[in-house]
Image 1 (cartoon, each protein chain N blue to C red):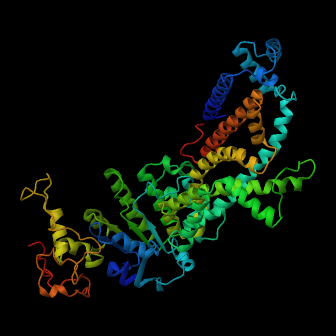
Image 2 (spheres, each protein chain N blue to C red):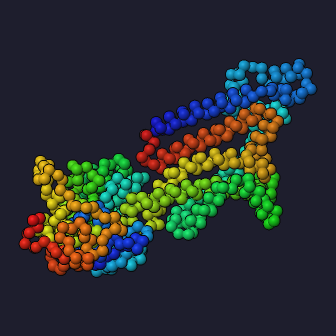
Length: 315
Length: 323
């Protein structure tokens, strides 16, 4: 394996460790004890103490941290403080909603951004290109939850095409699950797609005026040939970077969108766990989001080097 | 045999002429130099010939290559000629190659654009081209990316691309300007040797009189978007007739070998090249010309013959030049 990859993997692991420390420390320094919260204000001191010991919260912090990390690595996440249910299946079922939602949102975003970005760049001197660019500007200006509510009113309430809220589990009906994810994914993806479209437009505009494109034209390539052969990969470089950042944006956007569409995803789970002071679930979920962002960055970095020989894998 | 005939070429941007009535001809196998200061419209003329003018510029006049009228051709038809009969080498070798593609593949693509040959045949042609432009180990060079090559090496790759389909005419726009002085001479003599061997014609565009006169049989002097004088190289150097050509030669002659100048100052042409939309009507050199008279308000036509000049009051043809 090239040296770059080793080094990049090492920094990724260190970043993950640092993130986990931060998450653990911040959440553990919040005032109030989980045991107190669980038992309520009427509980006796003795009862609170007993529960604290039972939950392992009287152990030194570093022990608690190691216990938590060990659990994460072996997927033994323990039980919720509040419901007493095992956490792993709960997060698993939440992810079965959120992961497809984010991926579908990304798909919608890319499907919107690529054609609009490319066309508005190719026609940037004409009215059609300007109108398209202005439309994407509008898309950026609309928050995704407003778009979500608009979509509910139009597609669910008036047209009755798709469900407005709730989730049909995958095990019940794959089509049903996709249907319940359609509107949330569109409202997530359209906004991210509008942002991405601007970057695609800029990248294509840069390629259009590049000297190597003129060389290709001088060789006798048609404009579309030259764009396909030399333009796409060059324009892809900045877009890959933004795509990585967008994925983080989508994960965060999903928290809000799940609330709008009352989907039982990771976002909803996070919100309810925060409200219930279900500290350990919050800790796991925040760590999960951090891990997604960090690993995405790693993938973007690797992809960038695969595409661009100037940076190279340093083999 | 005349290969290229350009007559009364006009390029306009927003109603202003950038090229005003350019006429020139190049014979098969001939090496012609197009010389002029920056802003004289040399690059624009080359792009007009290639049919690659930037968007928003309009073109009138006639460009005839091998009996085919190029103006008004569809992009599809023009693309069949570009790179095949008519090739171009650009000024900036550092950015003229796709940074993400191995140079061998870029040359091979150029070969395959106009020839119905297999990938393997194209590859062997590509290696042959790399060897011809002076790479001692073509197979190894072909696997390199542009950023792994020096400026001179990249320009040689671009020359290989231009030669890929044996063009009848190669346009070279300041091919050595961006290179180190030591590399300039190498690339120039390579270009000269190759066009001679391939029997291609060369239109060499440069601001550098020394470069043009060392390579070319004939020199066209361009000023303000038009050709003001055209003559065999020797005649341009020994018996220039247009006041602009005379002034241009004086600027390079006034310096002796040790860098001393007669008057203790670098010789210059009085005034400056006007902005492209600020040229006077009539003769374009009006206002900077020492021989200007009332008649110069009319546009002078290029005379006929071997030594052509567009001036109402040219210097005499008997070598009276710089007097």
